[in-house]
Image (cartoon, rainbow, N blue to C red):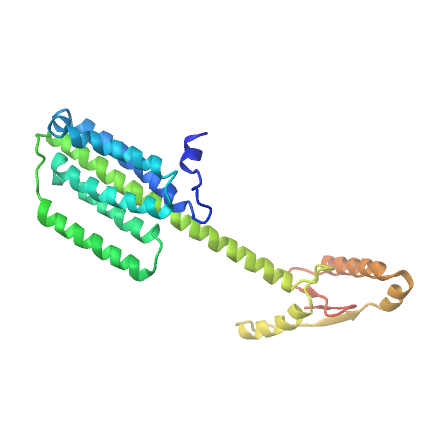
Length: 283
């Protein structure tokens, strides 16, 4: 099983969609990679100063990732939101305010809007809570330096890795959910187009049916079309005799042959339609 298939593995419960869960799995991987880069850039003093924190956080992250394959989708989202919140606050003392750990609140906000199921009022309430928590974070942690000395260049690298993780997470979340919506909308439009085509087409001959033949002039009146319209109606002589003598299958063959000839002779500006059992009309 490849990495993509592993991440994209379906949820256990059949009545839940995997979209949000797959998104959370990807976000866990991004956060873990950013955490590893932060630790490397910060150097040995940070894990030496916060040994428990630096060990427990990646362990919890990995366990939560594994849990996405067993827990319900709603629980998976709640666990992720809580982890992201705790992770941001726990890492600010380690790397300092300038490291940009508070930017992970943006991921929480996007997940609340895209992945969490509920009414718009519920999502707005969650957004308000995230905003309040973010403001409190400013008052408590704003300007806080790291508790261990981190070179300026390394500090900028840590900040760059975190902001890159946040940007990448937002892009992936937006792509996953907007792509699904656009795909569903595209399928719906194609389905509606097919239904409209079938409703306006004679099944036997493939010509426009009586409904289209009658609606087309009315549709022209509603547009800005100012040109003239010509209507030609033709009848197949002795068609009933063909049916009575050779059967309806032979009659159907005649209709198909005449339809094919009419379509062949018509140019792109003409519409060929069948108005009844044996008549056709050409616009």
